[in-house]
Length: 106
Image: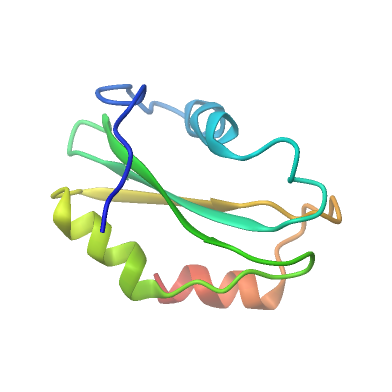
């Protein structure tokens, strides 16, 4: 199990815009329109980035997320906080019921 610290270590997250900027640096812009990906960003108590991990990458309309993988990486890097994100190739910004359920599980 690994996560990437490269280029992110000690970056401060003080707003959702900060998190979005880091996530955008890791999503593959060539695949965002046709492949759904799910990432987790791990933070210390001061909201500084410990690392980021691609949790899954699947098809056009869904991606499978194993909560244990999200939490395992968080435990390995001693994270105090986790921010998760995934794209919708359809461009629809409204979270689906599956999105809401997954977020609640995490």
